[in-house]
Amino acid sequence: MRRLWIYFCLTLLFSGGCSQKAPQGKSIAESGTAEPVLVDSSDIVPYFKYYVKRYTEMWEEGTFVRSVVDDVGRKLMYLAESYPDSRYADDALFLAGKLYLDMGDYDRAKSFFEEIVDRYPRGTVSPLSNKSGYSFHIAPLAHLLIAQIYQYYLEDIPMAYWEYSRIHKKYAHFIEEYYLLNDTTGHVLAEAQLNMGELSASLFGVKSAIENYQRTVLRYSGFTWENGSGVKFDYGIHALERMYQMSMRNSIAADWALIFFNEMLRQQIYSSVHTTILYYRGLIEYERKQYKKAVATFKELIYSFPVESDNDVIASMKALEVLKEIEVMKLEYLKAETENLPEQVARTIVKGKENELLQVEALLFLGRLYFEQGKTTDALDALGTIFRRYPYMMALSGKEAVLDAASIVKELGSPEEYTAFLQKNIFYIPEKYGAKGFLRKEIKAYGS
Image (tube, rainbow, N blue to C red; front, top):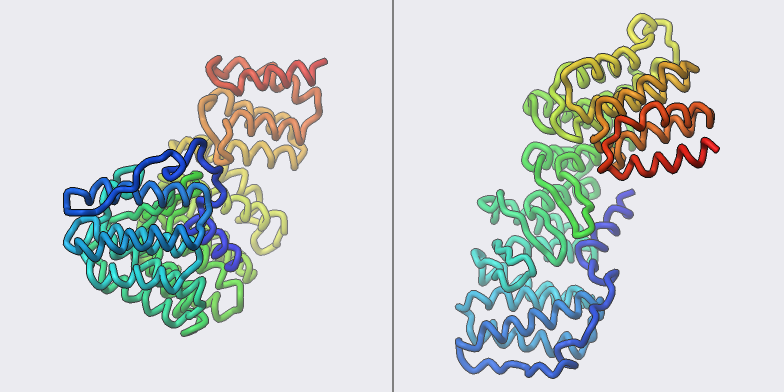
């Protein structure tokens, strides 16, 4: 899992352009655009813009030829050396470093990033350096790339950890700042802390790793990483997932995870990650066969805390699924607590004034549950409620909730029940939604 995650991050962060199609039309060289000459300071802007464009073309094509990279790298170095006080000097060094990084010359890339860290600790990225015109401090990102080069390419884990720890000491005052790298946005301090968790198990043991993940949760929950394709995660939520994954290694790791989960619950009352912490604590209790504790934790998660985010909804629905598994066991000592508990909890959610997404997901849960129990009428009524009350809602799946409801009936009901269900409920979907046209085709296909 960890190797897949590293490969996924590197593919998006460092090599994103390789998967893109080459741009249509001619390159700068082919189009006959004259290469600018840097004679004095008045030439800096057109000179810099020209080489930004050269780099962008190479990145979009995913092609980095040594002779071309060396030529562009020399021109960028010339700008930085000739006009070290220019606001474009640090940008030129960063662009040169990124060129060599993309090409795979990691030692050369690292030397450029180290020069930025040493010479321009408070320098900012020029808006001319990216399509969005976004400006941020350049040294923290250069330092992050140094640490990642040590971690992923040079495989020097102690040095990588040391560089990540230095990032926190040097750039804590930039805590609100996001970076933009090609099509990826992220947060330097959050990534550094998360990666310290990834590295510290092999260096200092499980406790240190879980402690670093805990710091990520406490400091950086709500900060997000996102790429140009819409892939996105919350650093705090991801750190909690990693803490849970470590708990599966052995009982000692699970003990430490529970200790840190409980400590965070005391510190993070009504925080954005509170429900997720409770979910993972309950999951560890469940896997340890501490079913009574797990039931109490999941009930606390669902009943005691407000549902404000999609992560809260996800945690609540996962908790319901585990409660269903515990109920199916029919444990005698838990019979009074668990009998029909998932159904009761889901119906309470639907009747209450909760988050609408949570209500929709609870109705989908009830629909599946009733079909499994052979209560077809109840299942159709629960799923039909989505059509009547939430015809406009998107489900967690990313599709219209009515389509998810219809797919459950199609999968678990008979063709006749599916057709009758659609004919009864399609009226509630507004004409402007594409789901209505799709379901009309379904009625025609299954009704014939």
